[in-house]
Length: 523
Image (tube, rainbow, N blue to C red; front, side, top):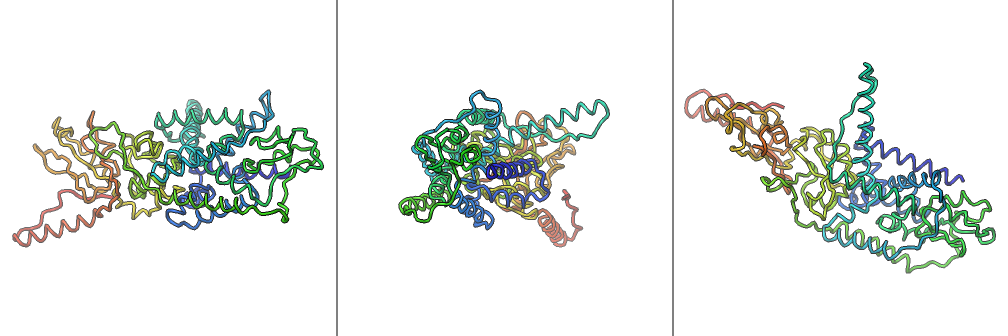
């Protein structure tokens, strides 16, 4: 009973921490991302393999070590998606007419076929199988696209109701409106997992989860295992009835430790001490073939994820005017770097203060389904914001400082004169210049005292502010073309000083006073 209580307490602690993380409760989001991200096996492994991060590497080693010693405790204690399934299973225990679980066949062929597809696809640069099966990414999408918007809606509804009575104790919160296609997919997936957990318990973890497949191999040779005590077991079936992994054969008095998720429900349910969690007797013969198989499996998985070569980006945007419609977050370096490391956990989507980072559906191509992108139709990237680089658990978005962020060129603005209201309606505008943080959207004389934009590409960082505020319809007069490889923009004040020096030089050469800058820079 004590083991089960310990499991529930630890699992709820981790689950609560991850929920609070997605709700941006912590003041030190970068530290929280580093520590919590290190506890998730596959994101931590990808991050460590890509950049050698100490915390991520330590997290991978700790999870594997725990599994080799204690079995698949990761699945029931640490994994938030596993805990979410346990919450669904709780409703079965409390409200379902048929509460007991049955023995399930070990679906090795399906589990390792899925694992092989994930590895081969990653090797080919296609991340969608990993994105759809990786547990933390699934939990992240559910939290970002379902739980968080629902919580904001409920909060704002309560706040609105109280405001009618002049009570302002509850503050309104900004609502993240998810991409409709991504939201529909996430809701349908959540419903599927709900009914799968109610009917079959942890079947997801033992059929399609890549972390479960890897940890199952390690658990087969773990030091501590759950096993029936032959002298005490009366084959009553109590333990099998509460086994959500369906791994206990009461007739044969055996436990399949490969699929056991170490929830300890069976130990707590047995009234005859007929099942125990105990240390592997040292006198048993070691199976060297299994150990070699595990080593080779880990090596192949590592090679697949580290050596994954991304395929060319297939833009799926309906904005025909753009040649490169996909813009990836600052710190992601390039399409290639981002696409082969992002597992679509949507932490960046959830944490982004302006909600400019949106989950895509097919915009990145089918091979990178659900990976995020920057959508400048609804918002723009803040000049000094680096939150997305701080929370990314896989290193798809590298951590950058505010100073580095200010010159990262994630795209370059393009101006189409014929779409501009200054040209079309001969009226004053200048919104793009007003919102541009670097003044790359400069204004130059047009006619009749009007000013019209001109893009200074060298200082443009592609933040999307100009595109967001441009009033031209149906097509924007100024928009951002994404940079497949992020560049480095010139600092605006350096360009201004160089222009002023050039002006003074020309004035001295011509013997006249230097002209004042036509466009001041503000920050």
